[in-house]
Image (cartoon, rainbow, N blue to C red; front, side, top):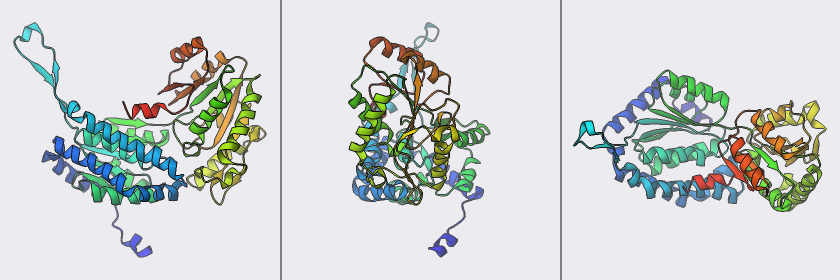
Length: 418
């Protein structure tokens, strides 16, 4: 193994430059523009998932201890849906769109013709390392581009598998995978791309954006945020609790950008909510969640330390009302609920991205909107209520990437089947 690592060629700026040059030459032949090429690649991706699902599930388990069902649904099935959606609509997407002309140009006609941008760079994340690597590629293929994928080094088993499967199933003259860490990513970002798609955190996003700006390269970014859940009192509490649990701990143990980050509820309703969580969490994960096979682990020791820091802050550590157990050796933290956390605490000001769920208290449910709007715009926001006027005010007042009423995270399924 050591000799293999030592003999592995170094990927530097010149390597990146040569790679882009090779892909531009392939793109210039026009092969990626044809409907047949795009269709072949998308069908090959579906075939890859059907034939290699056990290997994909195993890699995800190695990286995150993801349960098999969760990997099959949230990584593989969702990607298949994305492929099938593209296959179904691609011919329509490629058709020229008629445009109106004016009397001045009579009797002319006009149309809008969609064309590929060229060579696209995809930089993916570690939390859903299979889905978030290949889902952007589905769109890039459907649009007729050549592509370089840089998977996350924080999920090394999935990164290695992606490199092998992409080379085996897809057109290697137009679609490449570059493995590595910061040096390899930096070398790629020095190049001129026709579009960059990045999924990850705001710190790295600023680096990507700055590199893209040097070449005026358009960028698509999917970042995180603190996704709030407002819980009103006029609800089916058991159903609401189960849906929050599924969206929080059932989505990679909270390591998902749209998983609930914190709850806002009324002071006089909080204890009922906490009691419901305690009961339902035991039903989901047993009396000893550290032994549960249905919870993913924390991805690495750095993130484990980050989450521990949030829990150990002086003003927060006494607020734990459920969970809080940790297994540093196996990188596991049980589902943890904190009640009445201070607004100025670290856990209320940083994206948690883990199994910790603080509960913030307000006097009346309408005060929740001010709490949400006083921070950065969330990627998603959730409301549990049966009051029509409150639903309407939520939609009108809260600005977020997605809004869901009486459930959590389900909107991504709708997006992938639209």
